[in-house]
Structure formats: C-alpha cells, structure tokens
Image 1: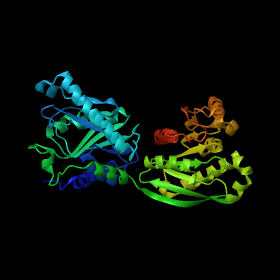
Image 2 (image 1 turned 60 degrees about the vertical axis):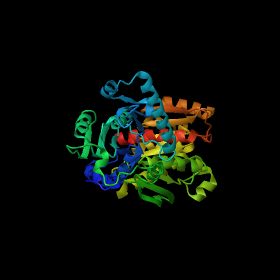
Image 3 (image 1 turned 135 degrees about the vertical axis):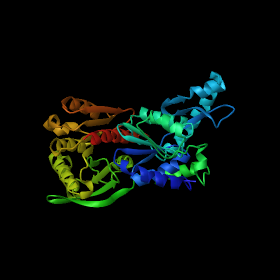
Image 4 (image 1 turned 90 degrees about the vertical axis):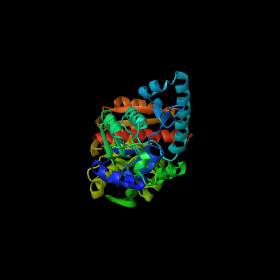
Length: 423
C-alpha cells in the first residue's frame, strides 16, 4: 500500500505541490476525509485552509455509486450515464438531491463558524480529496470554486482511477495525482488505515490548520518626534499588508478594528494596528482631529514597513475609521498605497487631497448613519480613482448591531485581496 493514512498521503502530496506555494493559493479540502489530507498540504504550502462543501448523490438502491453531486451556491452535477442506466426517475432523483442539500446546509452551519469562507476571486483554488473514484464529488467541488471566482482550479489527490483522472484533466486547469494504478478498484485500497474521518476531527483541523503568523509582535515605529506603539501580524506567504488608521479616541486596542484585523489575517493579509498619537497627544485632544499630522504618521508607518525584510515586496493598503479615514485618504495620495477602505469614515476631511487619490477606495457606511452617509456620497463624487460606496443595512455609526461589523470585515477583506493582489 502506498500510504499509511491520510496524514501520510497529505504530507507526500504537499511535497509534490510545494512548487505551487505562493500568496494566491487557497487549499480546499473535501469533507470529511479530504480535509485530513488538505490540512497537511496547507501546512506544507503555508496556505490558508478552507473546505468546499459538496455531497455525492448516490443511487437510491446503490448509494455507493454516484449519479451526481450537489454543492454550495446551488451547484448540481449530474452523471447522466449512471442516471439513465439505473433508470432513476425525476422524483427519486429529486428526493436524493433534497436530502443531500440539507446535509450541505448542515455542514455549512457547523464548519463556517470555525472557518469563514476564504475569498477565491482571482486566486488559485487547490481542491484536495483523499482519492478519486467516479469523480462526481470532485467535479462538483471544482464547479463550486469556479463559481466563486477562482482564477485557476487545480485538483490534487493521492490516488485516483486512471479513467477519472484523464476525464477530469480536461475539466480543470490541472490534475495532480500521486498514484493512478491500472488495477484501481477503490480509494481505500491505497491506504493501510482508511478509517472514516469524524466531524469533530474536521472541526479541529479547521480550527488549527492553515498559515501561522511568521511575526505577531508589538512594534515601535520612529515617527520623528515620537515613537508609535503598534502590533504587526504577518501570516506566512502574506498577500499584502493593511495599516489601520483609527478614529478619534481609539488606538491599536480598538475591539472593532481588532476584529476586522483578525478576519484579514485569517485570509492571509498582514495587519498593523498602531497608535498614531502618543498618550500625551491623545490626552490633549487637539491632535485627534489634525488630519495632516495623522496622515504624516501613516506615511511614517508605511516607510517603516517597507524597510522590514519580512515585508519586502508586499503592497500596502490603509483601513481608516472615522477621522482616520480622512487621514488614510490624504496619506494614500502621496504614499503609493494599493487600496483604501473607510469604515464609517469622514472622507470629506481629506479635502482637496481626495481628487489626488489613485488607490481603489471602498467607502463602507451604516444605513442608519444618515449624516455620515451623505458626507460619503459627496466625497465619492470627488474621487477620481476606482471606488465603491457600500451601505450596510441597519447599521449605525459604530456598527454595533449584530452581524454588521462582520459584514464590514468581509467587505474589507474582499477589497484588499482583490486590489492588493492586482498591484
């Protein structure tokens, strides 16, 4: 037998896939057994781990034989030859589909609390399973990730049927299969230990797998007359860096910005939470609304980051909140950053600098934050860069309503992943 167990298979597959490592790669395991293999691949590549949720549609009287598969986002793959040969009527097919879609929804509830979806737009989706038999489930998984905007889809397995590998090679960008024996009969024959993977094991793998920070530490940045305290979190194979510019009266310990930073870091983005003012300046309050001063401090942080060897080559984005958004836009006009996101911000405070911003800019405002929403609409009309105004329904200025801050984090994550990578 070529593999002891799924972990062994994952390590060996990871070694084969090592040349693919890079910030654009996301590893997606097929629950349940494929996640155990994928976790080892993600570790080997220093890539984020996610799941792609699909379910095989087994024949009513022979459930081990796939007549198709279903996945998230309503994806359906039908194996017409099997359906016709087994004479499965529409009613019987619909009943199996209904049952398996309910299971996809259940797993989504269980797994997405542990691992929110990693955005795939423009990235390489590395779909991993523990083996290929008929290929129906893998085909559905690849259709799901393609529908989510993956720029490149690679299917990777330790073992597979030669006929299925050949067939799927024409449907995805690349198939990587370590073993494809001519006498293939079942995936389990390639393993000494092929015990089922339990739900609890999948949840634990998702909880602890994926890229770990290469740096997660307190830092001190020289900004002329003061030194600024901050925290730098840098995931392995980071795809970019986001510097946070806080609003009045908040700093690197802001729970709202820390929550957003956690979501960004989970998607493979480095983050820098920094106090742009010294304690004395913060206490005096006058500097809190000094946009030019705050913008200068942001520029100093950006120069410091670009001088760090671990950050070399990474594009920088700004995430600004409240008055910090005005400072971020002023600094963006001169600092050469790749993207800006404003949360409940005051872009109007950037004044004439708005017209000079070239970085793609996302303005996120609460639907019930009427005054700030109007200020953002007026500021948007003055922007000459690619931009978007996103309104979060039901949210007030601080996004304290349930689920609204999570929407901000997801919007920011997708904006930075798209535009930092393009840069």
